Length: 64
Image (cartoon, rainbow, N blue to C red; front, side, top):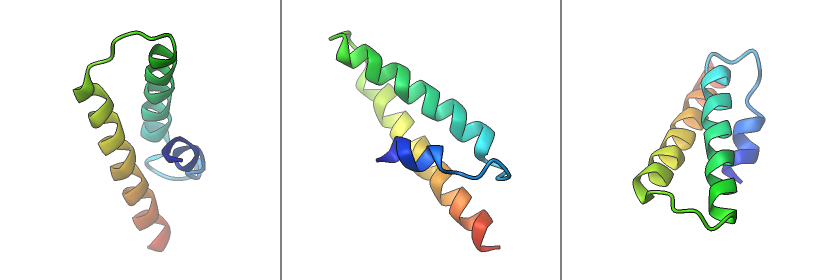
């Protein structure tokens, strides 16, 4: 769900470029996990936290 929400951030948003990078990193991690490769837990947690922070920023931009 987080990936889908990051994808929907408006291209006009200041955070859109950063969100695109975080989303790409998340997709790479998912691919690694599907291949049964080891991914450090801190990497997954950091990406999730970054994703939620970016969603909050995008929502705040939209409210202004």
